[in-house]
Amino acid sequence: MSGILAQYDSLGATRQAIERLRSEGHEQLDVFTPVMSPELEEALGIESSPVRRWALIGGITGFVTALALTSLTALAYPIVTQGKPIVSLPAFFIIMFEMTILFSGLFGFAGVLFHTRKPARRLSPHYRPAFSNDRFGIFVPAVGATEADRVAIERLLRESGAVEVEVSE
Amino acid sequence: MTTDRAAMATAEIEVPRESLPTLADANRDISRPISPPRWRYWLVLGICAALILAAAVAWTIQIRRGMGMAGINNPVNWGVYIVTFVFWVGIAHSGTLISAVLYLFRSGWRTTINRAAEAMTIFAVMTAGLFPLIHLGRVWYFYYLVPYPSTRLLWPNFRSPLVWDMFAIGTYFTISLVFWYLGLIPDLASLRDKFTGVKKKLYGAFSLGWQGTVRDWSHYRRLYLYLAGIATPLVLSVHSVVSWDFAVGIVPGWHSTIFAPYFVAGAIFSGIAMVITIMIPLRWAFGLEKYLTKYHFDNMAKLLLVTSLIVGYAYAMEYFLTWYSADPIEQESFRWRATGYYAGPFWIMMFCNVVVPMSLWFKRTRNSLAALFVVTIFVNVGMWYERFVIVVTSIAHEFEPGGWHVYTPSLTEITILVGSFAWFFFWFLLFSKTLPVISIAEVKEHLAHAHEHEHRE
Image (cartoon, rainbow over all chains, first blue to last red; front, top):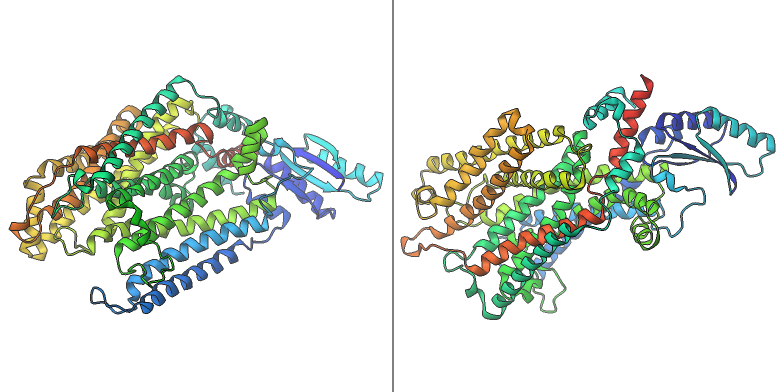
């Protein structure tokens, strides 16, 4: 997909550029950043990540699995030990607690891999090594745009403080 | 972005404004140690490897000849192995405290120490995990603890603290590893872009194709927060469960409800001491003075002081509870602990954990890295002795005077104890030359905000 790739060297400029681009109707932006930034998420209007649901489902799965594991195995070989009931829930709760956390974390990680489509063998053609170092990048797709549109986008990017602007295929 | 946060970020880096490192500086400085090591590194690594080998030989002999090679006897059948197991699990705790708890509290100063502390957590759990196996004697039966589908329907006894322990420590290791790895992904991508050839391929594979799009970061950020949220109760549960290995038994000196908070406080205390012990030489060897400042050590020293006070309070409270219980057996156990055969270890523990850290009330001690290093060595020693005192003195002096017996560690046990330190440092040394010891992405995050703030003024 061809378009225009601009590089920025500060968080503030990147944010302003995103806001201007969006106000002019460019919504399909790919933004690269070397640092975690809730500000850029906000500027792009990204909603809360669904990873939280993965973690919740994982936690519930872990709890139920542990409850089943401890109770059913105790019932499968019902021998009284330590004078306790066969299904000794207070003691089993510790296993349930640990497995809730274990599954929640692992499911959450699986969720991140799923939503970010990782592991990926290839990087985006618009990615530049500087984006893991000190540069922020905004890619504006310009498929089927006229020459005039391209010039307008380019001017907007430069005006908002881009240090480098190139056409990226 | 709030101005407060930017102001905080600047304060945390604590360098004059005009020399605030750029993002590229941080990238370069922190990844600089990832280069072919010099002879000194190989020498230390070699010493560690030799000590590990000695411990492996000792363990092999113990497996061949039996548990008689260890000094443990009846009634003192928990000795150095269990003491050292508890010690290393304790060391592991500060990593999670620094990375998760301080993250939730938005204590930005954790940024430069969390990576190394998390690595320490993982290596300490790897060390601790060996000891139940070594203590088991017939190590090949360890799978009895694992809930595998047995055709004889024999499952682990889930009422046993030893089984709780396996679940707690297994979960702790796994979650710590996921947390650590998640934090590493953006840094691995930086390294991928920095290197060429085989290194690029390797770092690239482990970075999973990370390219830092804002959308990816949003998922990442959410999970990071959740992991911090679940690691916090987890870390409190792990040492509580370890303490119940003891407290669930009816042995005088162990059977106490104070054990869980007492162990957790002790764990954090010893863990922070170990972080400082490691960070001081690391800072010097890798020239990270710009990122690991006095400010960070001052904060860690204050945490050490607070936890020392909690530990001191727990020691006193144990004696108070014993007196208040009016149980003569309990009282005898505690009298003997301080004045009997093991009075030496007891007073070493008191001196190292309660008296020495009081020097941290003085800013001069907190700001002198040499003094701080010495204090933390005392704490490391003291905390090992604390576990020795708890484990050994209690079972050596139980109910019946006829069953009293003392225990002295054997050469096999001491060799394995020394080997465990070598094993821990061996992994840490490998880590320090192959992965960034400070989180590059998080330091850059702070710097990006600080520069923003500077720009606006």
